[in-house]
Length: 334
Image (cartoon, rainbow, N blue to C red; front, top):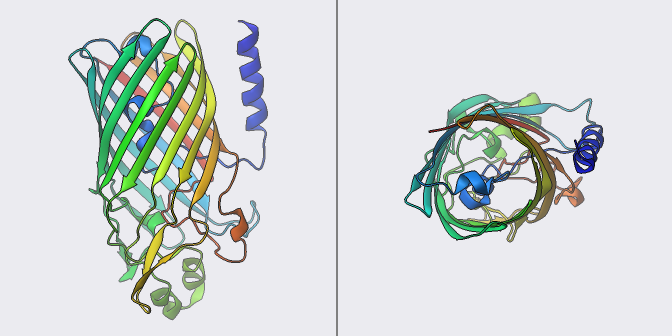
């Protein structure tokens, strides 16, 4: 094994020992795992004619209900998702991808489950040489998941919703240059969803559930902001396996909004825009030409709502923030 390999192993070991690490995968909104925006791309495989594959991903995560509590005293919401992801090659330069999640949430207010939002994308190979490959992806997201589940007639926050409730468009470019991958993308939602979570119904309840509900941002007729994404990744490839590491940046251009029924007007949610950067690492082991297993994790490097302590206890209103994430994927090519 060469010197670069041992360097990468040391970096991963040091990262895993970081006690204050925040892990998250790509935004659950999904655009940085679509087509040319995917991590851990292998251009020597991805551009074969009529390539077809099915991936099954097991996703586990948790996030603190209140960011004001200590890490060992905190109460968490837990998330488990099973994702089916199908890809099919169309001719020499095109491929189509569709992704369907089934989501489970185990939280302090309720346990919920349901089909999530379908994501789809059409990708085109724009250029390919021995050292350089460039791909383009255009697609979107269909709000097939429920975004206004309730418990005892009280609306639940977005963290408990299987879907985001919006029609989205996404676009992006991926550039593979030798061992490096660079991706650039944008995802824009076009509508407010039908969520009706407000604090008032929970305040009237009283007790611990009432206190816990106040830790979530209000999302009545929630309007999610537009996200920009930039990824840089370095990949070490061997005969049957590879390691990759990189930096994923997601920048929310504009603040999220909710409708205040008292004022009958939409209000911006403080600290809901800005940059989140994550250190990504993972690996793949290929059993043969058809099947492989992939593991990915990420370390959150900054917190865009860090100034919100004492103002908004959990100002990540879309419910996509995760404290820890682990994903394991099985891929079958045919």
